Each structure stands twice: as C-alpha cells, then as structure tokens.
Length: 344
Image 1 (cartoon, rainbow, N blue to C red):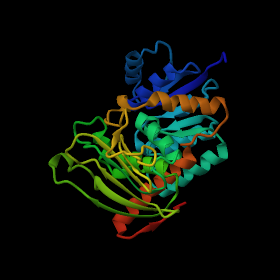
Image 2: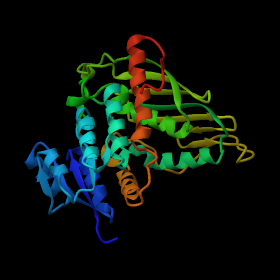
Image 3: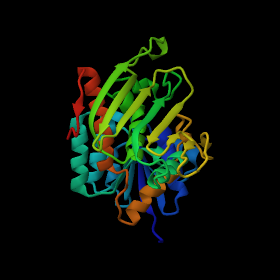
C-alpha cells in the first residue's frame, strides 16, 4: 500500500502525544493535522514527538473538513468526547476515542446512535486490552486452563491527587464523572473481557478518604461495584482514586479447575502435581503513567480495522456495555438500590 491513512489528532496533551508517537510508528498511517486550543502548545508537542510538518488547527470543525483525514484520535478532556466523536462520525471519519466515551446515559445513547448511522470504524481507548498480562490471560481462559470462571475481581487503585497532571479537571463532576468513569472503567472493561459475558444487574457503594489532598473531588473517589452476569457469574470491581498506595491493578479469577491471580496461575488439571502458584513471566499493568500504556498495539489494531474493513472487539458498541455498568454503579450508589441492565 503506497498511500498512508491520514490521521487528525484533537487534544495534543499527555495521551495525545502517545497517540501521535504510535501513529508515527505505524507504516500505514501519517499524522497530517493536530487540533488544540493553544497553537503554541501544539507546536511544542510537535517538537517533542519529532513531527516536522503538520497542519495546525484551533477549530476542530475546520480540521474535519480535510479530505486527507481518514481517522481521528479524540484525546481531549472527558466532557468533550461525545461532541467531538459525533462530529467525526457525521464527517465520515473513523475514530479512536479515549475513555470515558460518555458521562451520562443520554450522551452514551447519542454516541452509539451516531456511530451506527455513520457506519465508521471505531476503537474505544481501553488500552490495557493490549497489556501483555491481558494478552496472556485471555488465551489461557479460552484454552479452558482454569475451567469455567464463576467469580472474578478486577480492581483499580491509583491515587490521583494534586501531583497528577489531570487532577485539576478530573476532580470536577461534569468532567471526571465518577471513580469508574474517570479511571476504574479500565477494571470494569477488563472484567467483561475476561468473563466474556454480559452484565444484567449492578449494585454499588461509594465512599471517600478524609485526606485533604483529595478534598476537591466533587464525587466519591472510591467505589465498590458488585456485578451479576447473564450466565450467573458474579463479579466485583473496586476503584479508588483517593488512595495512598502504589498503583495496583488487581486481577483475580476463580474457575472450577483453577485460579488466575495477576501473573500467577494455579491449574492442576493442566499441570498435574502442582502445589502452589506458578509465576507467569509477563508484564503487568503497573503504572498510571500513560507513557507506560501499550498504545502501539491499540493504534496498530485501529489502523488494521480500517484497512481491512473489520470491526474492532473494543468498538463503541462494546464500549457502551462497559460504560453502562459504570453509569449503573453511579445510580446504584446514589440511590441505594440495584440497577438492571441494559440502560439504553
């Protein structure tokens, strides 16, 4: 293939910079335009990542009019995601959208409907799907290594305080959203991915630390969510972004033939005579720093879906199901009741 796919980036910040690097690494894509609120910051980002020639925009609508843009990466603050994604879809552009894809049920439905109508390729930024531990666990489950999973826990613990780049806007209810929408949705998505089942009911409880560093949060930054799945599987997601602890992404899956606990495997049916956990030599999700995230795999997948006209396993349709759990958890915690799914 001679012609590369033209890509436009909206939001040249922390994650946007990693998107740019990943597109530059892919032989079939080229970043042709970057849009942001501050032209000087765009130029600084171009210099940082090593782009010498690229169109600069402060008007997203104008950038979308370019015929040489095939795809968009949406890397702006959370409250702008839906509007920018809908605009991209209406312009006929494929898009990769950072999480959360929506902050309420109405927005979620608007985005889903617009994407269905436009028939563009989409990928939701649950980038941990490409983490080596995720890529190790998934085939183990498909190979029946621990049998049928009947209970799963995936937890997200990451103190997002004043020292974190996105803290200033993440604390706001109309931007951060909730503990799950802000960050813990990665854990919800991981649980869905491993269990390969659909949630039917959610019950959640929320609380908060009294540490003064986290006082600015306009929502409870800690939430525990219990999820009932269609087949009868039970799941739990704990999400805390006001904790004082090193980054923890916990995975614990109980099957009727064995157990997976992060990078440890106990599967005596596959390894007769096994007495304790075997350690899997892989890389765990162990940092909230986006430069540690596997964007190369995510972007390569997005480009492959466009070039080969195939749907992503983590497209908007799939992402809606993860976000429905997150939104149902928020309703449950606020109203003190269980919430049935789907919401839309």
